[in-house]
Length: 494
Image (cartoon, rainbow, N blue to C red; front, side, top):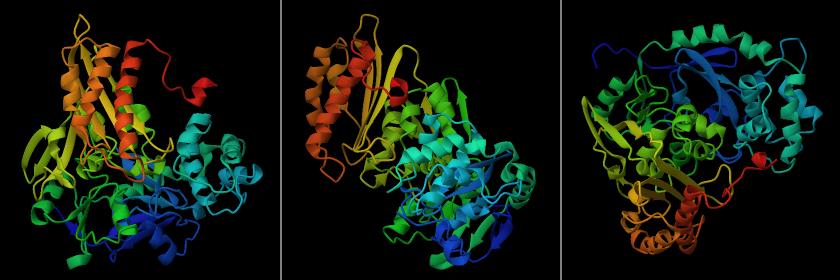
């Protein structure tokens, strides 16, 4: 691509040190580099799949010109994705007044938030990220921040007490990381020089495009490359399945893919937008998506994972495709300078197969905001409430005619077939009928023709089939207002 310069190193800041690396493997994780190359062993490996949080570090990146620090899982974050970032490990925590322990660490000590200590650095880093953005957090905010951190021995109440007390040990606004924000921002701006990064050759090659246009150019020449966005899925290909991902193209935080906009009632989300970045817009405009996003992984996963990646990998248990299909979302695909837009539901062809040509990539998804006359809900079923993979997920869109019959209905499920799939038979049984319990119960019989779910470690086929039918009944109950709320959080109950 004309005008694009190329360099052969990635540049970032590690704690207080500027780093430039010209030897980086496509599958080299941040965790391995920290421990093996830099002997920073406070960052632990527990699960190697982004589930336990023992490897949590903070990554500061520029977003819209603002330096934002987020907790991430170092075990599945690739080193190549960190160009122009500030990596902060537990070793870098310090006070600005000469005291030995940071306020987060001191609170954990005083409130007995640690026993064996293996998970403690991860908890400290997650609480550090929370404290910087919310020095006086609510219990609900603390629990959300710690969804991605697991402790086997202490129990969480001591950690909760520590989290509530952090600000009594110091002031977030005077934290060294806050005091250095301007200087770090200046350094990161200088590192982002608009270059394409290319390191290695052959089966050790990695590319970080300069922007979305450069990505399109790269993929035309490298149609077989692995596209890595948040790496919350690709990371496991490496750590659990030992797959070779080279050549790899890293697109996280790429200019041209990270925008969110709304026009004429349609929210357009760039493929590089993370769950965390999309949350405020989608939770405000489509409230039912807020609780769903709160249950996608933990904060670390939501800070890394992208909506575009969740769609592009085509998983039958991806959390975002079913609700977006029910909302009538459309997908923009790009190859070179050519764009095409298709209904999202048409993107999924079969298990592991999507309507994406060689060299083509997901550029954006366009989500219609449901009107006030419509009803929309999404329900996720898992073995444990937080940070768990979906067993079944149902999404429901309903519009009633003035006389109470079903004028429009779209029902989509994940975990019920080889792809995210609409319940066309159920929709047909409901369309034009009065929205009554009798109609709904009669339509439930059509599920047998729409889905033949499988049995796996998350749920049996029988359980999935029954749950799917009952979710429709739950949607009816919630939309008619004839019963008490189906679910109340413990914070609301208190």
